[in-house]
Image (cartoon, rainbow, N blue to C red; front, top):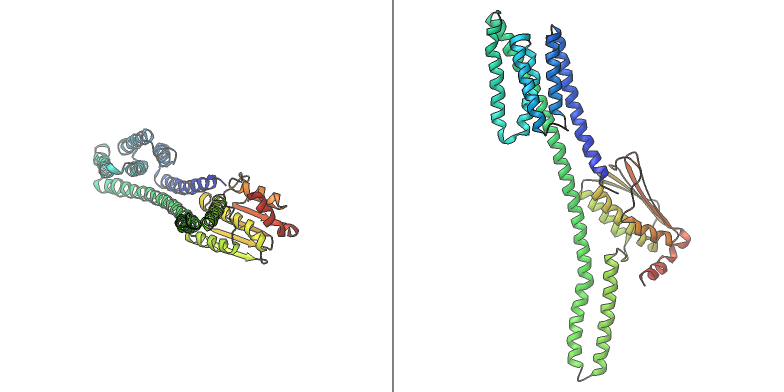
Length: 380
């Protein structure tokens, strides 16, 4: 499995947020045009301002000042055209949205940008009486209440967009931290296994070496036996260490299943286990290795919320959601396990369909009794 499903889901969440905000801004712009635009000139100013605002909000361009600053200048010019020539108080809409986006993109200068935008709005309102013969009351209603309410609406929409975007980012980070923690726990468990194998051996070797040194001159025959035991013990430890390093050490499927459940639950993933039958003890070793590798893949490379594990006497099936779409990827770490299962007459398959990833492994019942023999041959 690859990291593609994670990136795809993350991108879709951000795009969905952008689409919702863009649709809201466009709907509000259309409503303003229908209610306040009395001439084509007023509608054109509002349309240009809305286009600049949507460009600034766009995920692909909003992070670049080379795009934001022209949008800000255009909407500022539209606002002054609206107050001086076009008699369009709703021209403040685009300017308010772009100003809010710039303020979010420049956190170090947020106060200065916010104050500057507010002063520009007030300046536009202040110069309006110079270009109109309307009474002061009408001007106050038309160029104070309307622009400020329109600007406030745009700012609120941009703020919601930023809050949701930051929330999605934080959720991504939290999920990554949980997956990293689960993998770290697995590594600690591996280190514990390694300590159990080598710690005991080294302690015994130390004692036997000390004893052999004492006996070498008084009882050479017994000292030789002690040295032979040390040699045999070290050789067995090397074999166990190699098996552990290549995930070939004999595994207990029940222990692996319990460990997988703990890892998934620690990462906030719900797990359902269906036991269709008791797994053969000899088949359980190979199936336990498949479960261990599959668990690691899900934690590292998917955005799963649920996992389904089905066990039969000679097979295991693991299904997780949050896998994105597209053809099944390369097996990766499962490739070596697949080859071993094939050698034993079994099979291992993976499939990705409708956002779910399935890993299935099975061994023929007639050959399950021969697994230990085949495994010993591989090790030798």
